[in-house]
Amino acid sequence: MRIIFLATLCLFTSLPALAEDATTAADIRLITGQFLKQWAEAQAEAGYRIEYTIGNVDSRLSLAPCEGSPDITFASDPMQTTTPSVLVACAGTRPWRMYVTTNVEVYGNALVAARPLARGERLSDTAITTSQVQINASHRGTLNKPEAIAGMMVRRPVRTGTLITPDLLEAPNAIERGDHVIIVARSGSFSVSSRGKALASAGIGEQVLVENLRSSRTVRATAVAPGRVEIPM
Image 1 (tube, rainbow, N blue to C red):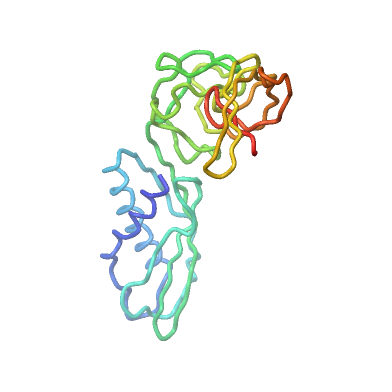
Image 2 (image 1 turned 180 degrees about the horizontal axis):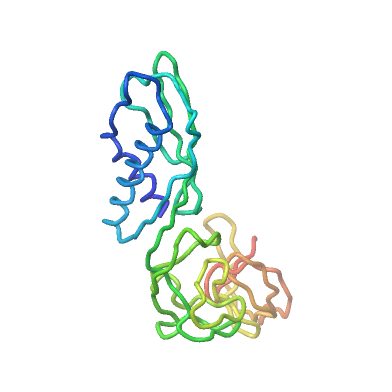
């Protein structure tokens, strides 16, 4: 979604120039509203529904006239917050910058639990479903591709309808305690393999104690793939 946010900023090239007189609160609200409208339309093409309101702009505002069209951008990612500020800036001979508060709601499809999920359960197609949610209300992020999380494990119990966020998931162990594994002793391009038995569980990149079945020695190795560990030679 970050990519969508950045890409849409390139679309706003048709905002009107401000009047030659002083720039007023009405002017600021007008161009901010047009900016948000264009952004919302761009997001609709990507499958999102946007609702927004503009915050208060002091009616006493009186800024220098802007020569040409002002630059206007989000000061923070509206896909990550419900209150992104909009920066309106004029780079003329009498430059000025102004932040306008907004309230933005972004709705789109995201993955939720289709049924109660137990801690340590591996996700399958029957465990998750897609629902329309407010994307930017979740500070922990959202997920929308079932294939990207298939086989991942749930860190804690989850109720039906709970939004599936990245922090709820963890990769399954590559090696389980008691597994027979291949121990690879490596030095540069040279390596020697032997068989071993895992004395604990570990994910890829984690260290684990392994018993060498030939020498009965216990070594500390790094899990590099399911059923495979490496030690330096």
